[in-house]
Image 1 (cartoon, helix red, strand yellow):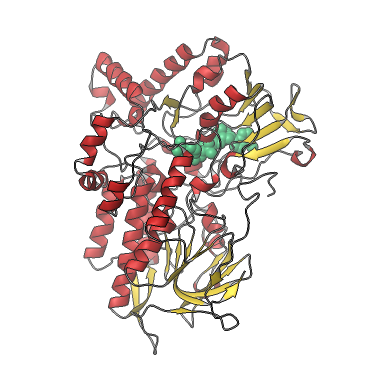
Image 2 (cartoon, rainbow, N blue to C red):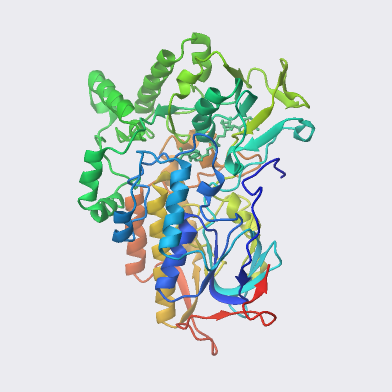
Length: 573
Ligand code: N01
C-alpha cells in the first residue's frame, strides 16, 4: 500500500550495527518492546530489536493525528515496574495526548538506556525456525539476517493500518493521509476542504479538531458509533495525591480488575435488578464521569440484551439532545449493533461538532462512495471536491501485524496457513508448532480489552520468567501443546459466545477486513482471571507447555551475542 505522506517523511537514516546472532530477537519498540528490552537485560539475555519506524513509540509514534489521545486515564496508562519511574513522571491531563505519551516513552527509553540495541527504520520481513539448530532466522527489509534462540513479537495490536479500500486514490490531485500513519510534519488543514472517512475512535477524536481548523469538513460515515464524553482536563490533584500515596499498590490493584483500571463507580449489579430511576441515575453518573464506565457501571451491559438496550437508549437520547438537527441526529444514532460491542469511543465535543455550519455528514450506506476522483470523492449522489482526504478506516487488528512477519515454524508450517480459519494460540503467549516464539498481547489474551500497559507488563514478565526458567534448568526449547491450545481456543470462544460482542461487525471479530475469518480475537473473561490462570499454569509446572532439554553442547545460561566478521561491530545498514 502506498501512502502519500507518512510519519517516515523527512527522517534521516541512523547508522546502527546489527549482530549476526543473539539470544533474543525482539520485534517492535513500542511500550511492549521497550519493556521487554529492559526485562531481558535484567535477566542477563542479549536481546536485539528491530523497529520499522525511525524511532521508539509504536502506536504512539504513528498515530499523531489531531486530537489523538489515550482512552485510559494517564495515571493508569503508565509502567508500574519501577517505583522510581512512577515517582519521576507527572502527567498533565486526565487523558494524555499523543505527544505527551510519546514524550513519556522517550523518557523511559532514556531513563533505562533502551535504544542502543534496536535497529530502527528496519522492518522484519520473515522469520523461520531452523529445527536442527533450534534457532530462529530473522530477515529484514535491509537485508539483515540474524539468528536467535528466542523470538519475541511485540508488534502491537493496532499497528497495521487497513489499506484504503476505495478505488481511484491514485487519481486524486489533493493530499491524503491515514490517521494510523500520520505525517510527522504538521498537515495544513486551515482553510482547506477536508474529508474524513471513518467514524471509529480515530475519526471521532480527530473530527472535532479538524472541524475547528478546516474551511469545510465532510464526514463520510458507514456505521455510526457509540461515543461518550471523555471529560478530559488537568489531572485531578486530589485524586492524584490519593493514587500517589501508594502508587505501586494502586497498580497492583489494577491487575486485580477485569479491565486493568480501577473500578471507581461500578456497582457490580445487573442493570435489570435496580429500579428505572436508579438505572437512569447510574447511567447519568457514568456519563458525567467519563472513561468506559457507562459500559461497566452495571456488570451485564454487554451480556444481557435488556441491560444493553437500556444503555443504548440512554445514549440515543444523549445524541438527540446534543445534535440540533433531528435528521442528522438520527443518522448519528447507532442501531445495528449492541451498545459497547464495538470499542466504545471517548470524545470531546464529537456529537456537537455536527451543529457547526462548516460540517456535513454523508451517510454512505444511503449514498455509497463510488470512488475517488481527481477532484475528490464521488458518491452515488454527487461529487464532493476536497483538498485533503483523511482515512480513519482502522486496522487489520491483532493478527494482521503478526501475519505480516511471514513466520514459518517447525516442519515448514506457515503461520498464515495455520491461521487461515482464525488464530490459534495458547494463552495468546505461544503458538503450537512455533517453538521459542513468544507473542506479547497475542490473540486470545485480554490485550485491548484491558489497560494495555498492564497487559504488556504482565506478558513481558511472564515471557521473561519462562525464558529464565529454561536458562536455569537446561531447557533449550519450549512449545505450546496443541491439545492445550485447542482447549484454550474453545474456552475463549465459549466465553465470547455468552456475550453480545459476537453480534457486532467489529474489528474485535475481524469483521472489518474483507476475507478475514470471523472470530472473536480476545480473551473476555477479565484480566484478573487471566492473570490467575497464567500464574496457576506456571505453579502447576507450566501445564500445556512442552519443554525439551538441551541437546549437544549448546549451553543455555550464558548470554551470547555474535557480530559479523566484516565489521567489528557487525553489518552496517
Ligand atoms: O478504526 P475503527 P479506528 N469505507 O476500525 C470505517 C484504538 N484507538 O482507527 O464501522 C468506508 O474503529 C469503519 O466503518 P464500519 C481503539 O481500540 C484508540 O478508529 O466498518 N468506511 C469505521 O467507521 C479503536 O477501536 C484510541 O462500517 C470505512 C472506521 O472506518 C481502534 O484503535 C484512538 C471503510 C474505522 O473504525 C481502531 O480505531 C484511536 C471503507 N472502506 C484508536 N473501512 C484511543 O485511545 C473502514 N471504514 C482513544
